[in-house]
Length: 84
Image 1 (spheres, rainbow, N blue to C red):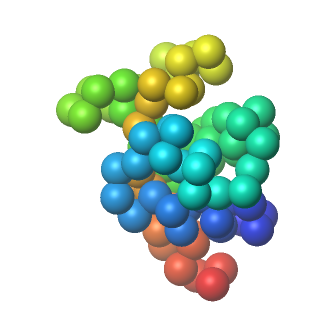
Image 2: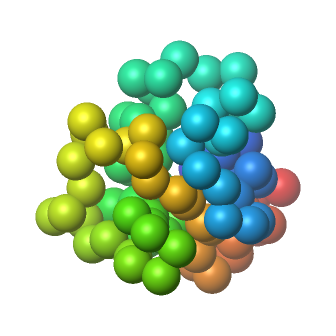
């Protein structure tokens, strides 16, 4: 897990909207999208289009990332806490 990924998961203990996450972290918007995609592919975060509608990998659209909400998954929290 990279330092950037660690910081992202650290901010995702609760469901967090993209804009809130971007404001919390000192990251470029494009970099945040790339890292969120990587974390999702690893199964370390969950992505929601609506509060009760989780998206699968194939459904993620880069142009919609600003509308998504994110949450660290159990696997992501385990990886985060074992790296810390």
